[in-house]
Picture 1: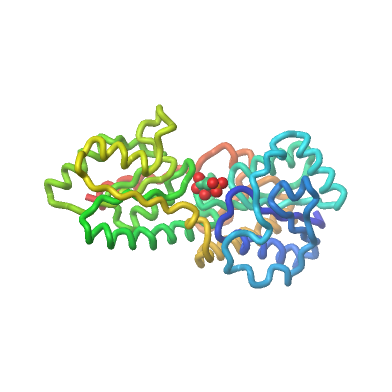
Picture 2 (picture 1 turned 120 degrees about the horizontal axis):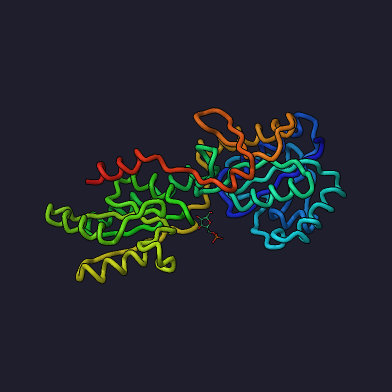
Length: 330
Ligand code: F6P
């Protein structure tokens, strides 16, 4: 490997720039040529890439988003698109790829490595933290902190009015932002796709709390939470509010959907550190011939998960967290 490409793909996340910087500077340190690829896999198909220097990544470690831009590239799903991409990589002599993104992005990397033998390394970049083989993903810590700051503000007004607030946080199929921000803000309920909490359970606990004259209630809902998993169309905070209002007539509920605010902003210190560490080890891994793996951190050690496993498996939520939620919210 002497010429590598780096790209960001899927939803952006704070820390992606810090990872790009680490890949570029480590690559150059070891004498590699490093190419920045624009808009994820679209940039390979359209041959939109440029050689990067140490200076081209100056002053970006503190910036959210990604200087390489990102996309969810439909064309790359079919073999035709990938053939075009391979031809462009070959033309430029790029013989290694670092892909920063989530499981969808790793699927593309896995296919490229399998079909054309391009050595690929994945760096976990998603605010959802739903990847197997790593305790950290870029952007999760920042997103959870953004959610905590916003929920603290909502609690002030909820408390003044003795109201029930339902706050929706991101997480397409994962409840980690909900879990972490919910515990950290003392939420009464945390609703996540991983746990089958029914509306009935929430209603009975609200009635219980009413008897105890507990007036302020914060319910944190992951966007992917479904009160009835057999009906996937009904999900998220608005639906939870509708179902509760139907049953508890007269209850005043307000809904806040935090949305994409959670994807932006300067990365936290942790996100900058893990991005730097993962970026450095991604290049080392290519140089050592450890190909087609996702670079992760488990128990403060680097951990390498084959891409095909990283795509297939999901991170398991620690059971103790669920007990902690139940006990501390009472
Ligand atoms: O995967 C990150 C994420 O922010 C999810 O939490 C969310 O469901 C999704 O991306 C939103 O994607 P988009 O910005 O394309 O609407």
